[in-house]
Image (cartoon, rainbow, N blue to C red; front, side, top):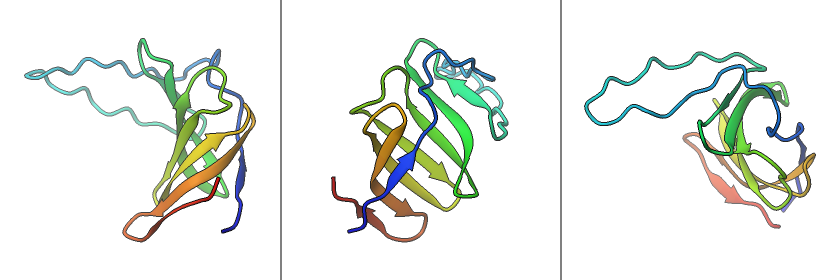
Length: 112
């Protein structure tokens, strides 16, 4: 199996969020309107060290979600209109794809 290494941007910790989406739609309450995001926008989960950013990767727009803080040894997801990937961070700036799947297609686990 081919080894893929994905360079990543700096950790979300300390980054200013362009948009913050708070949890809060409980049973019986109206769901908030969806947030519309553009490339470069970020969202964080209120009270949790989780966030996502909208970025370009290999020419495609992806939603890159991960935890904040030190990334080495943690996992993240990259979701595009075409496929989904799970990555394991080797450091704060480098990650390896460990799982990939194409919407309406196949999936494969990549070797560590």
